[in-house]
Image (cartoon, rainbow, N blue to C red; front, side):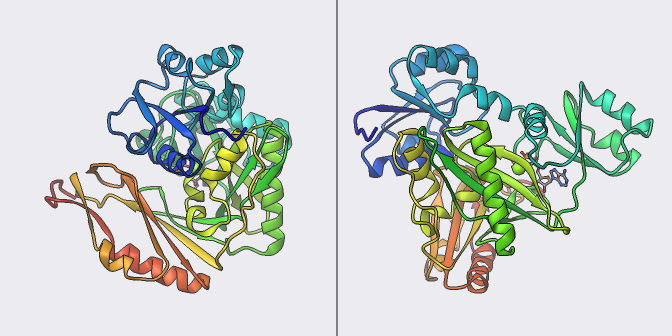
Length: 391
Ligand SMILES: Nc1ncnc2c1ncn2[C@@H]1O[C@H](COP(=O)(O)OP(=O)(O)OP(=O)(O)O)[C@@H](O)[C@H]1O
Ligand SMILES: [Mg+2]
């Protein structure tokens, strides 16, 4: 369905929504955003935006009624309303049933287990007290990883429990799961796409390096520095997950590579993903264009890189800074060949807030890393009136 008149509704208007709208605009596709925040990133570039809560049944219903197709940029949305819209004949991708599995980490892990998809061993618990009991009685040895079943993001619903002392300070409240602490050599992600015809395309694996304090991906590298065998296995695994879920659209599959060469699926996200931002500047088809191709029932594009190497860094608000944002050093970084800057349109910065990203493309991984290091040290996301917060 290549249509410049059909109305594409997007639940969520953050940076992922903004970049999706920008890709849609290249083809004159019409995009409509539902988000609670006036002036949210996507509202600045979409066809029209509506203020409302994507978690609220009535808001989603009212929003969806005059749209032709509804998609998401965040999985924590009201799926009952999406199912009702589907019954009324609206096209909804990804499907609400798949969203229900993915937005609950417990159901997601059960899905992997049931389908023989390799993942770290786990157990579900009704609440933190049941988990504490399992630890104190010795049934679950420490260390382990505790994850809240719902509403976790950017590492916020994840606690690594190493000592009994951690039970007092780190245990997260509510329904949760315990997971074996995996021995991780490197974390990678593979983004796959599937269209309604069942065609699947995958992007090359990316390597993710984490910010030690913020628990956010800080540095992302494509191609990942893994063997071609691991690369092929990772791509095949991502394809298997998207096919097993019968998901239409994008699926980002986060994986751990263990020192023994085993791949474990950590979690997946049914939408454009932070680990695919580089594709805007480095791939034949960007992840955002690919998502549109998939949900609009168009032929999928190639995810192949156009350049030898790309490094993506998230531009996070500096610690100690809160207030109207200023991008210090941006001009200096743009003087470097291969530096591509993407800012999200957020007026206010705060510590570790994702304000934008930079992709550095180069002829070799080494050169791309060197330039990314320069950008990391020279491009600072600060408040116009600095040090408004104490460190
Ligand atoms: N079983 C595990 N063993 C070791 N480390 C883990 C395990 N599970 C998670 N982690 C670490 O914690 C990080 C965050 O976990 P996870 O991806 O499940 O949380 P999240 O909040 O959904 O993250 P994000 O939104 O950043 O993707 C992982 O990227 C990994 O570094
Ligand atoms: Mg994750």
